[in-house]
Amino acid sequence: MLSVELHCHSALSHDGRDPVELLLEQAKAVGLDALAVTDHDEIDASLKAAELAPEYGLVGIPGMEITSRAGHVLGLGIEERVPPGLPFGETLDRIREQGGVAIVPHPFQKSRSGVAPNVTRKELAQADAIEVYNSRLLTGRGNRRAKSFAREYDVPMTAGSDAHISEMVGQAVTQIDVNTRDSRAILGAIVDGRTNVQGKRTPWRISFRQAAGGAKRRVVSRVAQYFG
Image 1 (tube, one colour):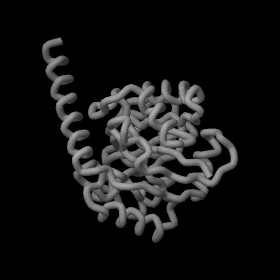
Image 2 (image 1 turned 60 degrees about the vertical axis):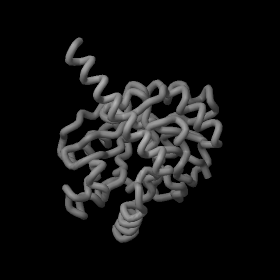
Image 3 (image 1 turned 90 degrees about the vertical axis):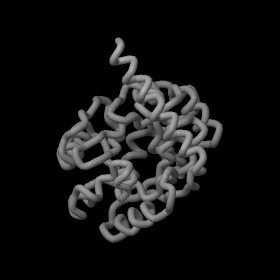
């Protein structure tokens, strides 16, 4: 069983804070086996993290969190950016065209661009996996709904810390039943449903700090663009 962080953000995300080196250091420190950096609509930092991961004793999984027209989708195992704003089904297709795996994070939380309010249940079930434990939900209701849905439709389950600061990497991990320390083997095991999820909720004070820090960085970025 490998312990894998499938959902975290670097400074390249509009609401992230830290460089990939700090994310990798944290992943190593908490005993993870593999890490996917999934920045919002960007992939360059994730590609860098995947390249550097072996230096930290980790398997690196490239990917990104794509803002589809319906909401957020994690594309793992891809090496080219999937553009935002595409229909949900086309976003899944673009990920799979690259040999990637499409995972829907926090599907039932509308305030964080979950897709469930904007797609049918049949469409949601077309994902390769559903994130059923996200550490940053303030209550457990969204996670419970996601887990119930995944069970009903027999969709593989994953977890993710959704960390936007390095200290929170590893709050929620996906335990994957695979013998090979290889990104393709890990992704194949996810699709096959050979996963267990475990984790703990991000303390609300830290969630607030992450959100506030992200808002501040967005304002600074917009001001810089305006006067640039």
